Length: 191
Image (tube, rainbow, N blue to C red; front, side, top):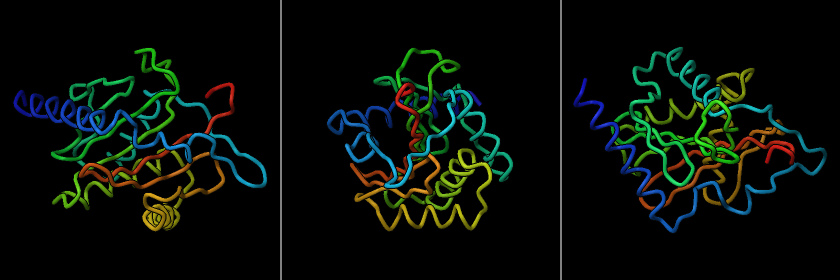
């Protein structure tokens, strides 16, 4: 178990370093994501702390029978973002609206599952992506989740998949990694 913790911490630190080394820009910090709104009426996500987001994600992971949930032992913090090594080359991060270091108080804004391009664990990584979506769209069916992932794949590096519920999914490829970034759109007082 000790070796797994060391590997997990090293993986989380390496992934955090790789992400910040690519120009200091978060995968979800494109101007496209900063002012997301629908043409009709803007819908906002419910406020959710970093810890709530992780707990809901882990519930979905365990409900799907996946053996490796997000664990505090594999956490590292880099540039105000909480990074976690999940399994081998699969990672998870939560970037709060404003980082305070208190995961109970920090409001989750961007949440992502990421993995290496060509990963032998891509199928497992996509199961984590579906857990991420289900945790944030509690009433979504498996077919709705599959459709949202397919839309994000179709719009890869060009746009976001939107269900008009304050939750957006974007798929990007950069620096040898694939990122599925879920953004929670809050009212401006929370941003």
